[in-house]
Image 1: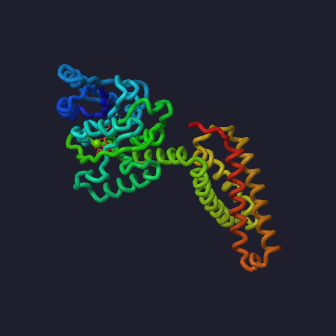
Image 2: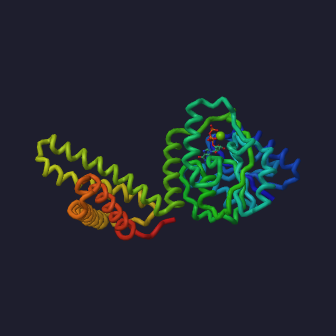
Image 3: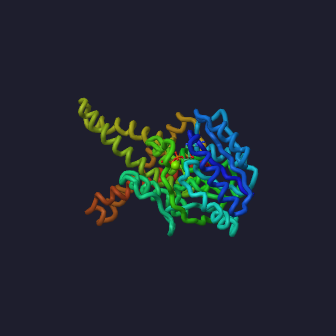
Length: 361
Ligand SMILES: Nc1nc2c(ncn2[C@@H]2O[C@H](COP(=O)(O)OP(=O)(O)OP(=O)(O)O)[C@@H](O)[C@H]2O)c(=O)[nH]1
Ligand SMILES: [Mg+2]
């Protein structure tokens, strides 16, 4: 017994084809199922269409209320509402070949602790070749970025099957479209199995893929990296924020001189926008998966640790150049070691003390 969850938005023109295609396949394979259409209150007549189809097929529709329109949340709503433990999720636009469902279910049944994905990139898989170069590059980069998060070759796939008992739905925090990726990373699966699919482009209805969705995808990835790699991801993040803070520092240093200030004064002042920039970015980005603490107090603590960090920086430089002849000849290296030491000190203070140690996920 299987629940097939189909998220829809403006798919009135596709739903009848989908329902009959799936029914043929399931009957032939003698699989009992229900199809649950989760529609985000589309401005079309999908409700009436599904009501008509329900006379001949095991299909029903829900329209969740009171939250913004969202593909991933729709899938989660569908999984919650599903009658059966075995879940298949697929798109409504016939991009996903219904014929593959029985094979996906067989694969899932071999080991129900694993997540099963309909994959375009595993051997035997593929997609319509009339993609523009732009779309192809876009999709390849998006896929590559997610690869380190899972063992799946097609982490972007929206066609998958799993056992609902393996997922704590309250822990899912997707942003945007990639609910499959979210489930693979945060679900309690022992691994991923792939079944080859030929992906077809939609022929009816309009695409909802746009720049806003791609931006959301990057935000989602960032969140998943922080979840999966925790302290290491924070360290890399912290380094990138530090590098951007260096640019802020330099820009202010020159800008203030351009406005007529002495260079020593400019140097003393430019520290403040830079340190505040770093504090803010670390708050909203690097440590975004941790509980928020009061702003003013945290800013103050951040500044204090940076000042101590600077003493560490300067101390290392001083000690190396006065005691080690090598570093006295190559002072720039002493400067680099100093910055490295101070960064580690700052990161340690930030991770243990300035930003809460409590994670929200
Ligand atoms: N419930 C719900 N479903 C959505 C939403 N956005 C898209 N969908 C559905 O999710 C599935 C995938 O969306 P698509 O628009 O096909 O996205 P795509 O496959 O990446 O792009 P195209 O096929 O080129 O349009 C389809 O069944 C859509 O109807 C949404 O905000 N809410
Ligand atoms: Mg599609």
